[in-house]
Every structure is written in C-alpha cells, then in structure tokens.
Amino acid sequence: NPFLGAGGGREGLVQAGSELLGQGDLPQAILALEAAVRSEPAREASDSTQLDEAGREEARRESVAWQLLGQAHADADDDAAAISCLRRAVAADAQNLAALLALGVSYTNELDASRALDHLRLWLRRHPDFASLAPAEEEVGKGKYDVWARQADTTALFLRAVGRAPHSADLHAVLGVLHNLSREYGAAVSSFERALELRPEDYSLWNKLGATQANAMSCAAAVPCYVRALELRPNYVRALTNLGISYGNLSEQRAAAQCYLKALSLNQDAAHVWTYLTMVFSAMGRTDYVQMAAATDLAALCAEFEV
Figure 1 (tube, helix red, strand yellow):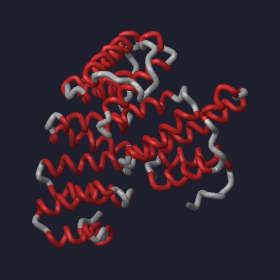
Figure 2 (cartoon, helix red, strand yellow):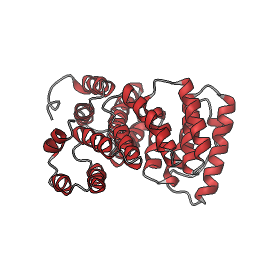
Figure 3 (cartoon, one colour):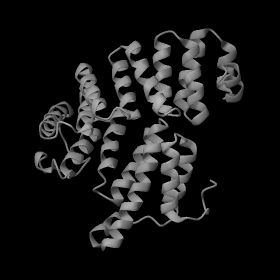
C-alpha cells in the first residue's frame, strides 16, 4: 500500500481517500482509506462515554474514515467488506447517521432483512428530527420478532417521518429499500424516483432505481438507470455489474461481458463477477472464453472485448 507511512496523518489520508472516491478511483481510494484507519490505534467503543470534547472529535474522525472505507467497498460491490467497515464506524461514533443508513442498505443487499430493519430503525431513533417517532427497543441484533411484521411496522414509521419531512431524499430512499424488502417494487420505484427528484445527481440512487426495475423483471427500464449512474460515476463497480446482469437478461451477451470485464478491471478479486462472466461466455457458446475466465486471464479477455 503506497499510502502507508506516506505522512499527513489520518486527516490527510481521509482527505485523499475522499477525493479519490469522488473521482471514482475505487482501488486507490480503498488503499488511502485503509491506510487512514491503520494510521492510529483504534479507539475502544467502551471508552466513548468517558471522552472529553477532543476525544469525541477524534472518535468522529475515526468513524468517518471507517464510513468512507465502507462506502468505497460498497461501491466496489463488496457488501461483506462494507458491513465490516461500517460497523467499525458506528462503534467509534454511535451518532454516525450516514454509517447507520449505509449499514441498512448493505444488509439489504446481503438479504439480511432482520439486521437491515434493525439499523434503519436505529437510524430513525438516533436522528434528531425523527427520534420521537421511533420507540425505544432492544439492542440491535438481539430482537426476536416476525420479520415481515417488523418490516410493515418500520415502513409505517418512515411514512410518518416523510409526513414530517417530505423533502428528505434520505427518507424516500429508505422507503425504496423497505419496499424492495417487501417486494412491492412499484412502490419502491416511486420512492426512488421521488428521492431522485430531490437529489438528481446521486449516482447511488440511480443504481438503486435500476436494481428495483430489474427486480420487477423490467431490465429494459433498468438499463438507462444504470447508464445514468455510470455517467455520474464512471468507475462505479456495482452499477457496472448490475448493468451487465441486465444486458445478459436481455440477451445482449457481448455488452454484458464488456460490463463485467470493466468491473473486474477495477476489482479483480470479485469472484461473483467472474462467475457472471463465465455464465455469459457459456451462453455465447464460447468454451475458449470460459477457459480464459477460469484462468482469470483478465488482460487477454479485455483485449478480446476491447475494454
């Protein structure tokens, strides 16, 4: 990692990582932010109540570093790594609302509805504008409840929050996530479209809208959403992967392969993308390409597909 020992301390590394993330350079952003979180000893979460103001500020800075690293991993289509980092962010600063919200989304992507709901409710409970809407409840991850009833109750809470703050893109985006959990894709599409009216340059919202259209078996409608996300963030691995899936479902195998290869050029360790690529090559009837994928010969495949 060229950023380790490069000087500038955590603050300089976080700034560098944030700038690289904004530029869409995910591999370098991850390296910079990994160096940032390793640059100083981690703070024990149990010490947080005993910190003075300077200590709390340092904990917040540590939390932001972990949050940004989690966002970078999520953008790179690695939710498991994202969750690990985002949990560290919340451990350092329990009031990091962005990290809590991102955890809810990543757990949804991992099909862990129970933890997704826990963290979305926790976000509402810790938000200063909506805390009164969410009842006090058990520790996150310790509850025993019917997930579908919990989902309906959580959706009702967020609908009440939207009534209080109808111009909050975050609230509409969460409703989109919740409607996806309940497979109410029409309502989810409406929620993400409303969020995009409020925040039209948000690349991640365009990807979420595309994924919802794809979940609703409308890949043709999903494609322009992913394309818009990639116009806003050209190296967005998650959108590249999703676009490849939609092209594959539309029998546009070469376009699908090009998307997967570009995604792999940004995250060569994405085993699931190699699997998707192999499936495309099988659909094309190209055993030679299947063998190249088995050998993870990325350079040769990129040359073959002009990526």
